[in-house]
Length: 76
Image (cartoon, rainbow, N blue to C red; front, side, top):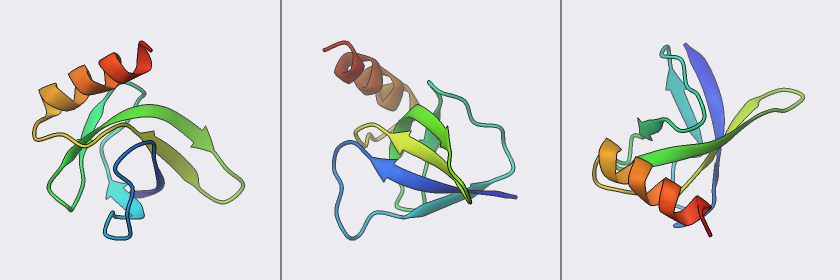
């Protein structure tokens, strides 16, 4: 399993998960479901010195909604 560090562009508070573990490949534009039950669009993947960080868009109720919201927010 690969562990990713998370950075939130929107909806960030102390209750958000700080890491995500998965054995599935992730790419920019994907929607991922975190342990909080919400879906987030992946807007950036950055390789840091010790971690890989995913930058996430606004939270959504479904994968399809997360992708649409991400596209809308990135078009501004």
